[in-house]
Structures are given as C-alpha cells and as structure tokens.
Amino acid sequence: MNRVSLPPLPYNYDALEPVISETIMRLHHDKHHQGYVNKANAAIDKLEKYRRGELELDIRATLRDLSFNLNGHILHSIFWPNMEPPTEDNTPGGLIGDKIDEFFGGFEAFKKEFEAASKTVEGVGWGLLVWDPLSEQLLVVQVEKHNLMHIAGSEVLLALDVWEHAYYLQYKNDRGSYVTNWWKVVNWDDVDNRLQKVI
Ligand code: MN
Image (cartoon, rainbow, N blue to C red; front, side, top):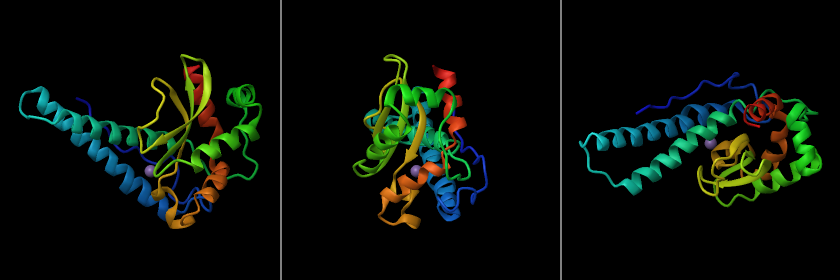
C-alpha cells in the first residue's frame, strides 16, 4: 500500500503574519499535520499486515483511524496552498469569481454563508467550499473533525481549518475574528485552479 508524507509549506512560516502567526504555523504544520500523516501511515501499515494475513485487526477501529487521519492529511494539504501572504482587498476573479456570483449571488453573500458555516462548526472541524460534480454546483460544507458531514465525491476547492490548534494561540476563543481575518490570506488563484481542474 502507498504511504503519505508531509508536504512542505509553499511559503515561509511567517508569510501569513499578521493574520496567522509564525508560531501557529510551525506547530500546526510540523506537529499537527505531521501527526495525521504518521497516524494515517500507521493505519495503512496495519491494513497491509492484515491483507498479508500477519495481523488480526479491529477493522472498524482501524478504518475509523484511517478516515480521520487520512482526511486530516488531505484537508491540510489543501489548506496550506489555499493561502498566501495577506492583501487587504482580496477578492476572487476568473472562473471561481464567476461561479461564486452565479451560485451565491455575489462574493459578500458567499462570504456570509461560508463564515456562518465556519464559525458554527460544533467542536472541531472545517468550513469548506466544494464543487459537487453530480449536482454541478458549488456548495458550502461544514465538516466536523476531519471527516464527518462531508459530501461524498465532492471536490474541495477551499478549506478553512477551525480546530482550536489553528487559531487559539493568537485569537484565544475568538474564532469569529480568525475567520473574518482569514479572507486576507486566501489564495484565489489556487482556488480557481482547483475549480478549473474539476469542472
Ligand atoms: Mn489543523
């Protein structure tokens, strides 16, 4: 079976300041994301031994570990390149700009829905913008943990991590300010490229 590995950040650890601090980025990328990579690989190791008949396995527990940790790895691998150094007037253009206008009625209306989804995730999770190829539309999705409430088969275009490890050292319990500030660091070219590949 294939193993996964931690991708390097596409910018320096301090590149997103003052929106996201260097300290958060170092911990978040080097410790938390690495942890999901390690635990996903541990689940894959177990499954490989199970397939060879070398290990009895609690399949339910192992597949739960695989789903949680591999999805954690996948979502963080989208989250990092979804961001770039901050700009004040940061708005989407290109195809993603057109599609946001088409489906949400404008960028402000989209922001309102995405912020509401991200701010109200119960416990830990993500706000996502996805393209569902079956219904052929953009959807805002709220994901709990890394894997619950996800839309099967949808392509993740934009991911916002609202686990406390993503903001607590800087924003304390004020998830709302983190979410509002985060728009400054969204890399809309990256989001547009992801849409172009799947539409
Ligand atoms: Mn995270």
